[in-house]
Length: 255
Image 1: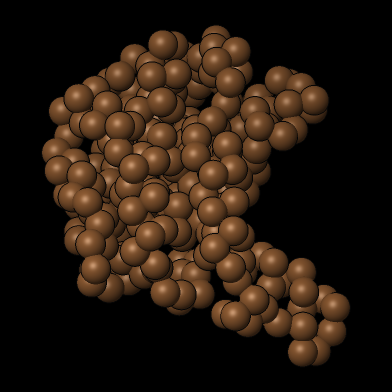
Image 2 (image 1 turned 180 degrees about the vertical axis):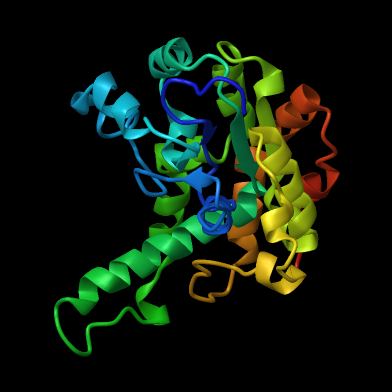
């Protein structure tokens, strides 16, 4: 890369449950890449009180440094503007995933987190399928942060007011499973690092899933509800980016 920027060399702003952990697992083994704050620094979303000097000092030093924090996708406009003022030319990666599947994955993750909490109460404390009712799932689907995280056009519109579109690499989650090597080559080119360290890895190794959640029946009524919730944003995203998202616009039906 050219002159080292103030702060991280690249950002990945989400979306949550769309491949960000996979990216971290791949890049943390690259000899030229460092994650001095771990995967999710959360400076702009949680630790802002530590101050800009803390954030800048965290990424001071040699090599290419990254901050992969999915919560940045829903930062308020003033934070995005301040981030741009600090690091106006930073390359940005944004993973997107079919929003119905993403919302379901998030609900399953929330369920797993509940299970971990219950496990601390002692042996036998476990959530059973019959404990779960429709209201629990609909509440998870409609929490404002959960909805905002799945509205990718809304995210891009907020960020594109400050950052040039050319700074963004938008990656579909589905492409990781289909061709992980191609995805990695696009990412390494975008952030300016050599892709050859991944040459010795097989497609299976490159496409290894991380944090796969508990398998549950995904009711048709849930899928239909989520499809209607996100449909307009998908249309908007397709128009904004020129990406073909027609597979995301097929109404759910019985499998």
